[in-house]
Length: 311
Image 1 (cartoon, rainbow, N blue to C red):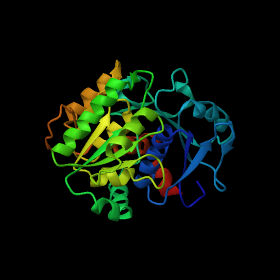
Image 2 (cartoon, rainbow, N blue to C red; image 1 turned 90 degrees about the horizontal axis):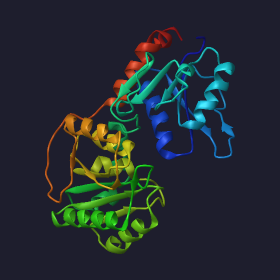
Image 3 (tube, rainbow, N blue to C red; image 1 turned 90 degrees about the vertical axis):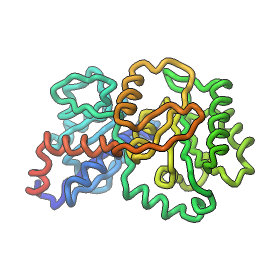
Image 4 (cartoon, rainbow, N blue to C red; image 1 turned 120 degrees about the vertical axis):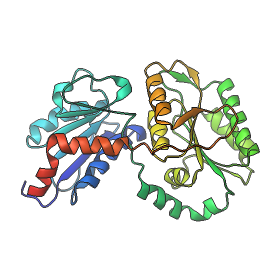
């Protein structure tokens, strides 16, 4: 390489959960390689691709179905780049130099790296930065604090009126136990649940419900929490919560978990995850650092350390 730094492209569509996986792995690889820089490539909903203004990629990291087709075209355009895909590319395994897939997907290929859950962007620096940015709002919430991360319906899970009622009961349990609440909903969260949260807690000074309006306090919530509750639909949020080393409680939804039961078992085996039955406990475990481990394996298997030195 003739450049002074290794260039990483994080390629994904506009879905936040998909984007976070590609960007999270790209950022983690960049942290392992001094001088490396990560750029975002956006595949818009209309199919238009927004590319960085400068530099071609040395390492191309993609996630999501639209990235599969783009990888085929970019391999022809950037023949010297190394290509990595996050998640299971199904029948397109030979399109990539490496695949970083969740262990619960059971991808058994020579070029596959298995990890608990999926890559994410949570790091100690981002948690500290989040707390600093939202220091005034956090100070207004008396400790201890519970972060509550709510996803939404998926192929396997539904959020019914019974699920909403159960979530509201569990949040009341946390308040009764003396915790302030920092609640984050997602784009997938049903309007009925968002309305229930605002109706029940809108005037409660102990509760902060972030509905997507304004700057996102997600990292601040994780950083300031003493414990974290997560709906069981989101691999990303469960693994992000487990990366903090703080107690993680699962909030059940209606449906059959299927392969995700293996993820829950892995997180329980690590010591991170327990079901929330209304009683608050505290426990310790080593923060789950699967993203860093996967990034180091990418660097090792692609020989990027030597490439960065030669740059």
